[in-house]
Image (spheres, rainbow, N blue to C red):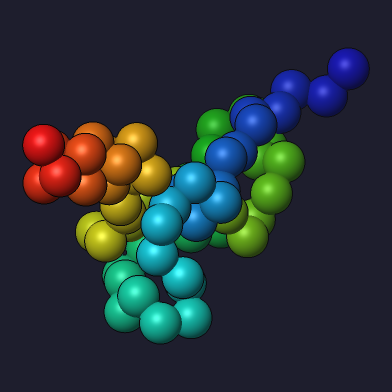
Length: 65
């Protein structure tokens, strides 16, 4: 079995759209790896504009009540 890290694309869980959010993301292809490989080189693994859907819902609920 291959030694591999699983990556999760933050953009899949963000309320913003990558095409218009003007973020400065860090892509998985930019991360140096040791003996393991990443399962995706096209995943955003860190972002300065990430907005959690849960946090956004909490904020909206707080604004309503």
